[in-house]
Length: 495
Image (tube, rainbow, N blue to C red; front, side, top):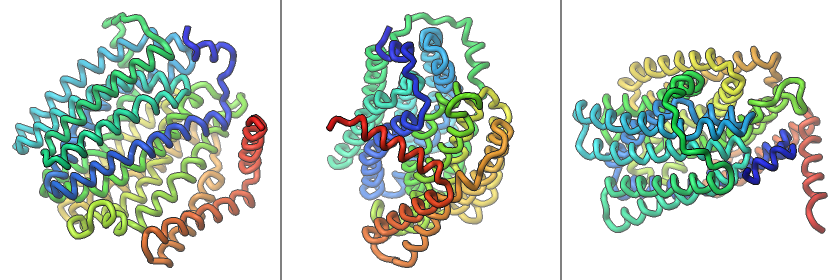
């Protein structure tokens, strides 16, 4: 029995705000640090190799990202849900999941490369699809270990396994670019780093958590796929919602346009980790809490939404208000000026996505995922239709507008499903503070209309002041909970 199993048997599972904050803080901290080097790599690709090469890389990455939900079939989230309630589920499920994902993901990569070749894409795009695709295969396999860390609510091990991979991937790519290498060599570095990340994840799991018996029971695969299907379909439709615009853009426009859109989209993706981190921290709690527990399920959901909005609203405001300054800083405005309008639209989509993603984790964790899956499927179809109408007229701005409209529709549907599950939701209590503070931040930044180094800190200060004043005045309960947690934490510190 591992140390983590002993802790659970001693009753140390603590469904408190402190655990949510700890795991969320670890995940966000890791992503903040982990996003820095990959973003530098992306910017160097844009500046050194140009928009056309960046467009080929973005397209191959988008195609291979669609393989992830198809290959995982939601099985990692199934593992999190089951292992959150019964640690023995790791022994029963782990290697069956790894075997299933390996078979489907390898087949998916080969099929994707074949389709790209048949559609007449350049050889470089097909090669990038193969390299990034097999890197995705390794990431898919390693995700099973990350699911174990999440189920045990020990997100520090997620940090230990993902940071080395991200920095190795970025470091190899940056070295290749500085030495005059090609984009194909950069993708090869991504593949090598993914292999290292897989090894680290499995070693950490087997050393500090559980070492499942190496048994594969193909007869159980049908039942596993059936149970995981709601998660898998939701992930698939969500990826279609986020990736199909790039594929359609490549069919209607040029590699340069895809590169411009990819430049703005990369800044959106670099911010999505906040939503993923909060959802990962609370999803195990969504599985075992109820309305008769302390805290209750509805309380944890509402406070998680407020916490997530408090983190994502200022990021969205910066993306919208300072889009031109960000593009100039990272990519160079002279070559990537068309990215500015798309980034402003995608900044609004970021805030909507945060609520949708967290609400989806709640509904799926409660085994009532059917309606949410179909809602996501409907919005994915809407997104395809919007892209087909808007891209020929507005190019990359049309693709960004389709994403924003789709996320707006999906957030409404998600909140309706959450209300059916939990009863009446206190929407104003969840959202009004961050939104009012975000409006104040935007007004300050627009009024200053200065350098990013001036507007960003002053806008952030305005956001924090308004948010604190608003929350202390209207919702003292949350403020008192936060203060009591801080007092207890301070009291436990030596000296």
